[in-house]
Length: 96
Image (tube, rainbow, N blue to C red; front, top):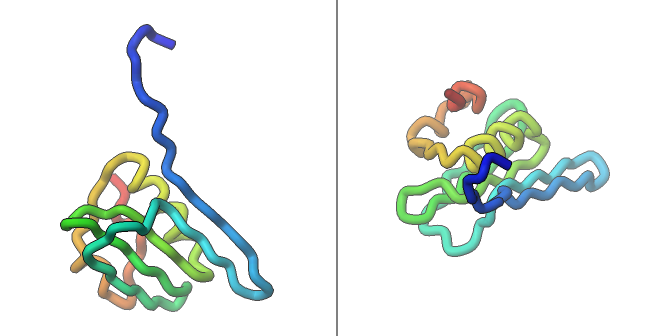
């Protein structure tokens, strides 16, 4: 719109309700080299990294994590995996 060429590169995402489970996926979990599993009182999530860089997040019954992951991935913000292991982890703390 402003005369500057910028590629449109949306973050792929998926959301599905399966009976009482909500499956949410942000990013593309192909070619990952590390997975960090998070189990909180809100739900479960897997954070996928490729060579130290966050590439995708899958979550079950954790819409908050899904929404934060979409924002992190779309803004190119990387997350230190050590921040994900606390039971009281709040994904909103990762946003600038």
